[in-house]
Amino acid sequence: MKKLSGILIITLINTGLVISQTTINLTWVGQSTFLMSTGDGVRVLMDPVNPNMAKAEVPDIIDLVTISHEHGDHNYTTLAKGNPTIVHGLTGSEFAKVDATFKGIPFRTVGSYHDNQGGSQRGKNAIFVFELPGLKVVHLGDLGHVLNESQVSAIGTADILLIPVGTGPTIDLQSAVEIIRQLKPRVVIPMHYTPANAPAGGFRLGTVEDFIKAVGTAYDVKYSGHSETFIAGKLPSKTTIMVMKTSE
Image (cartoon, rainbow, N blue to C red):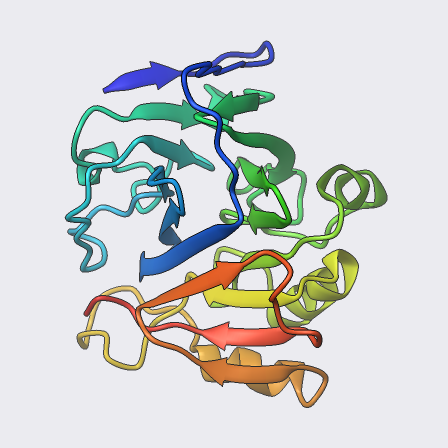
């Protein structure tokens, strides 16, 4: 596997492909792990979870792995088959400041924290922003606080927002609702919570139903399957909470 990280800006360029990204498929593997497959066959694995911490399996050959922070439920690169390029959002205790293009997919990071105390409790966290043509996908990692004005400006308006809702070591429910208001996404996909079908015992996070109750009637709610396809220009006109199933 190829690893890329650093304090300076990272640039990945593949000049052999010209890709028009208008369609993506998102699969929720579990925890904060998503597989994003583009219409041109590029596969991106976000925050791969250790299968000892949550049931997870990714049969596909992966091209790119992104890691928001170095906790075991987010950085298990062995989950990715093949010989992917691996991009870490942090370098040691510092932000890696990623600004990259991989096989036609521009993506970058926005620095944030795993807690609301400037990282003093749980460290730093990198938000990954994927700027596909007509589809901006934002993975918040283990964000622990409401965004400040600079972070909101750096991220911009999201089309699809992957947001932790299980509270505990990440944002509380009120903060999750506020971040949705800040980023104005068309689709919100909850992550980092304990699914209803999770085995008993072990570390438990909050449920997605708690999050939906906190949201109230402000947004539409759709219960989806394990995967969902999104097409640029054909997203819901009203912000929609899309609750996905894991592979369990």
